[in-house]
Amino acid sequence: NAGVTQTPKFQVLKTGQSMTLQCAQDMNHNSMYWYRQDPGMGLRLIYYSASEGTTDKGEVPNGYNVSRLNKREFSLRLESAAPSQTSVYFCASRDRPRWNTEAFFGQGTRLTVV
Amino acid sequence: AQSVSQHNHHVILSEAASLELGCNYSYGGTVNLFWYVQYPGQHLQLLLKYFSGDPLVKGIKGFEAEFIKSKFSFNLRKPSVQWSDTAEYFCAVNANSGGYQKVTFGTGTKLQVIP
Image 1 (cartoon, rainbow over the protein chains, first blue to last red):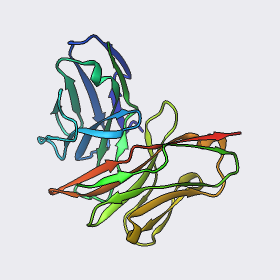
Image 2: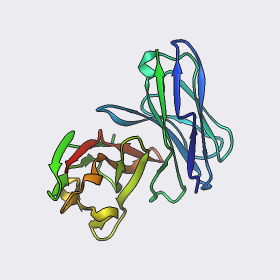
Image 3: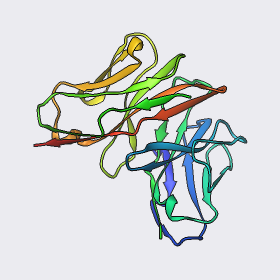
Image 4: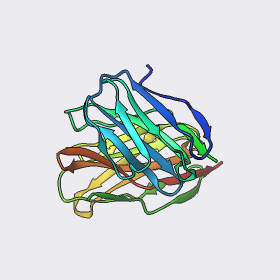
């Protein structure tokens, strides 16, 4: 019952460093998402991938890039980390084209940029 | 653009008290509605969902929500809360946005239940 798996769970970066957050799902879902969660702001969509081979910007894409490596995996990259990117990052997946389905979330990655 | 408003940011209740968390959304078309719960240190889990049919939806752990289309609301209720309900609750709306089914989350309500 793995569902959505994110790595790492915790990370501390220095300003300007780069890193990639990994996400994999084993539910054969078509759509995958990256959100960031900040206090008082709920979840905001960074990028999404409606299906394998496609990616699109969400509400807050600046400073991030994504790769949909295959149907299972969707990675989020920070090329030059900034303190404003300190947040908890959640990956989610959802079945498509059946749109009346819920999203399943990973355990989250707590990222601190100092 | 669709949006979701959760009126209460922080709610404190004693055990056995009744709970109602407000959620209003703005979108003129067909929507799917969700409530997610996030227990401390954990990921989001689905509490309940509304797609169509009976507007009163029952979820896990005794939670229910009522979809009132005329009020664009989907309030979450529980008759008697327990200490284990301490968590953050998120309302979410799924609607069609440029051909893509976009899910928008509210800012969340932190519920603290005092024994």
